[in-house]
Image 1 (cartoon, helix red, strand yellow):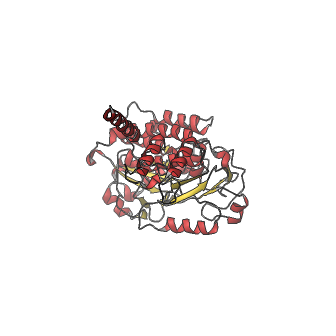
Image 2 (cartoon, rainbow, N blue to C red):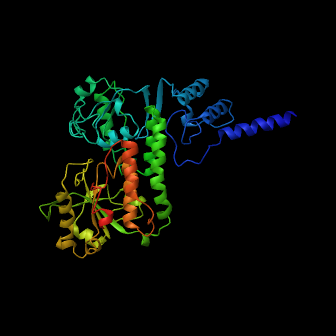
Image 3 (spheres, rainbow, N blue to C red):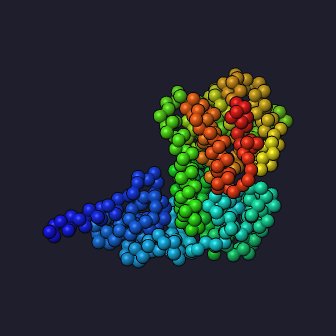
Length: 430
């Protein structure tokens, strides 16, 4: 009888500590003892088993972040589950542990994609200061924050203005690359920490330079930090629905089945090529959409000669333009349609590129850079590009409908995406 009881207890413990489902990432929140993608009662049980020496210690089991594993960690995990913790320790974009006091109610956020992420999480009510580039200018996408105090440029913060808002957190623009040879980001972080000693500096990275898995992890982590877990889970589900259906079709493609693409940026003026163009070696939406980046392996974003582009002979050319203009788009009024058309036509009419496949077949496109290829809407960019690059695989997929759902459901904007030049020429015009 006793043996049966012991077996029953053992089976119960095993069921409790096993993850509910396989996860693609580890949620970087201290308290996630079993290091899956969430904090739940399985982590309570796992930590208790560590204390009883039935399980090996894990880094994230130290919920109190005091280098000890004891019942205080169990209590902290239970508080995190209930959303009643007084402080939370997590791993930031640079892989460094960071502790914030809860709740976080006042945020200075100085980058458009950061603010779009906060909007998706229904947390713009927490923003008390923005950057100079958004003040009074982002009335369509961010009407609720466009009149907030100017806290300096995203590249040149006004520290006095930031501190005057008494923020619980400052969210800068930083590329949190995991490349050890790229030190700019971490140097910048240290500079901000020195200037804002009393304010936690949260370094997140929702750029196109990190993988989709990393972005989902960051999104979920921010849900814990801002007490927006339900919103985070809802959008994560939408994000994965958009990207997973693409990945299912493209992950098995051979290199020969993946078109060669060149990702560059605005460098044409007055109908002529001006200077050496860029080639971006990392652009996650293109990779997920099933293409080969001709600049793969090159350092970051570097300038290249047209001769190099000709040798690589891309089948598609994507020109990134910041806030790429529209026909009456509510998204990005910065550039007119004529500017976007000029970029495409300049490449198509460039004599040096006349024999490149992308030019010969008129496969030159402008991709909006700010609110499309980065951040929360990156999943939409993946869908648009997949439909463009592999129409035979995605006959039933409707990227524009997905995009409209995103605008209606997560941005709360009563607008149509049909007129926007998120991808120009538009799919139906290609």
